[in-house]
Image 1 (spheres, one colour):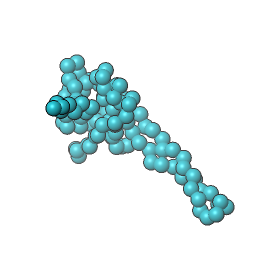
Image 2: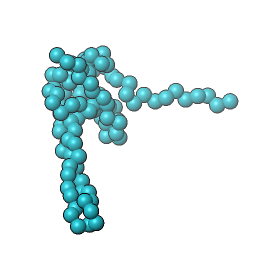
Image 3: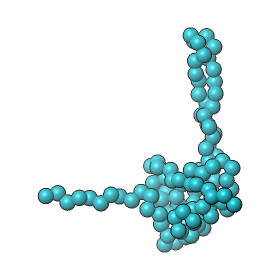
Image 4: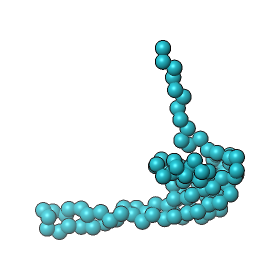
Length: 104
């Protein structure tokens, strides 16, 4: 089994979900739920209870192939998100607030 690299999504929605114990990660398109759970447990040392995945289709993009005569269309890459629920009492310090320095 190869190692799977998962990294957290830094969005406002992901921050709000992390307050409830659900963390959002970007994962490879070909990964499955058991691989994602194993990777999160290995990387962060926590117990995973549930994994939900969602594939986000790439946006359609228009581009120019000349002087407005032959516009082209393509799509951006698809991406996959994993919503990982942790066991009660476990947490990951993804959105840890920096220590405030004392003013003199």
